[in-house]
Length: 169
Image (cartoon, rainbow, N blue to C red; front, side, top):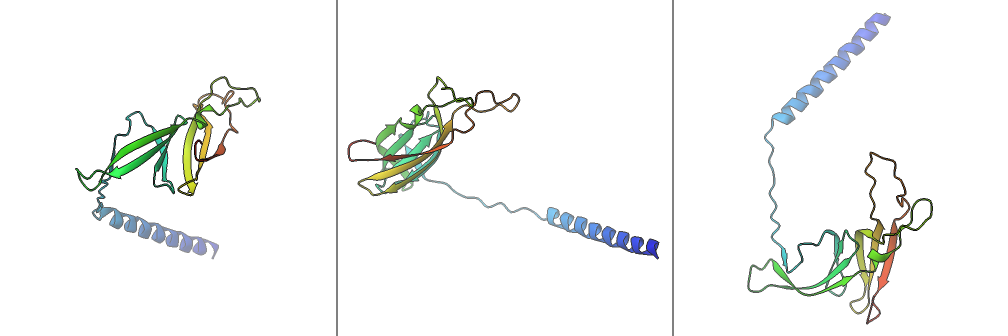
């Protein structure tokens, strides 16, 4: 009786596995249909050295772009009427270096001599007259995963708020 129950279970499991394998083979044999997307928007007059990590349009209609090295690039852009309708041109640029100069620490609390930050995200809110920028950043040092994370500032993640007061950030 006990042997018969196990045999029935084994037959059920085997039938389930065979069904699953058959379904996978049927699905895998179907031709994959890839969808193509066209990204035709282009921004001209942006430096090639920009290592962008995040971007957001502000309430002032400017494009805010963070750079992995700790800078915030602010671009006033216009549609380039001489080219394709999908080409935009930078007509004014501003760079904020504030985040780059945030002091890092080692895990033991001592100051790290190099002031560099890695910027990873941005959110721009507020008004067109007084935008407010929220920026996420952390210590630029990255663990190579082969060694212990000696002296890395593993608690360095911050959110910084920058407010435009009409003359400066």
